[in-house]
Length: 404
Image (tube, rainbow, N blue to C red; front, top):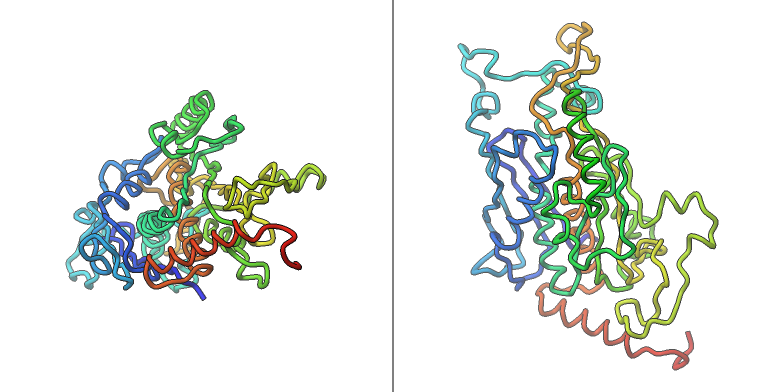
């Protein structure tokens, strides 16, 4: 049973986005301006973003679940108001339109975009105007996810778990990665144009984004989320839906435009023999979070058998190019079936850096859920006692002292 769960509501150009986060224990020190809003700003950054990011300045507002700077254990409700709503009050009004309304003011769209949810959505929900679909399918929804993930990140930080991300490719241009990542990964990349550790590759990525923009095209890429300080033993091997790698893959794959997820050296490992894939097991008495036995490499990305190993957790998301194109692809007009070019409206050229921030949020939410599944507790103090007891046990169990 899930301990941490969340739901989001709201449309891209509606009045705002709503997030409801359940399961955070009582007693967590939480300041929205300090712990949530910075991640919302990080999501809006990155070279290649569109004009919408110049309009919105996302901040979360608490409706419930927080009092005097501490969580109450009750559902945490957050809202992020859309500043652009003032330009869409007629088109996105919850009330029926007046009889004399100018049809253009409703901003209806009947030319579905290839690669977007437009066409499948109008079939599934029996709509004609793709505005009814695209407003909710929009990646604007991820702002609410990031708000929830920031709270989960704050909870995990109480136990020494840190989560960061960086871009490893854009438009087929791969970054050269260091053998050891910076301890403060976000601190190392957040002030760079594409949240990438390779300065030379970043310059080439920027050029590729500029070329794509000039051609009316878009670019995808790959981001990597890394969680450090994760203790051994989260997740389970005993049931398919308890395996943590499956839960992480589902969470990251649910992000708009993500078409592939890998754990550790997933794709590369499929091409090599086992002797060059599996991580040798070595004594590591100085590393209690691995149970005193570690790995000399981390190709598995911190997971074996659906359970964390105590090594850094590494998850990659592969993002397709954004489907809103100024160089429009062929489509069909839903009003009469005639052939026409797909619709277009304001959009990004590339959003891989932002997708990495959303990936952090989804990884944080899954890890927080697995952490509470393992340690339990309605209050932070209770969770801490359970966690510390487990860590004490890992350090004291030794070898040869009992029959295994």
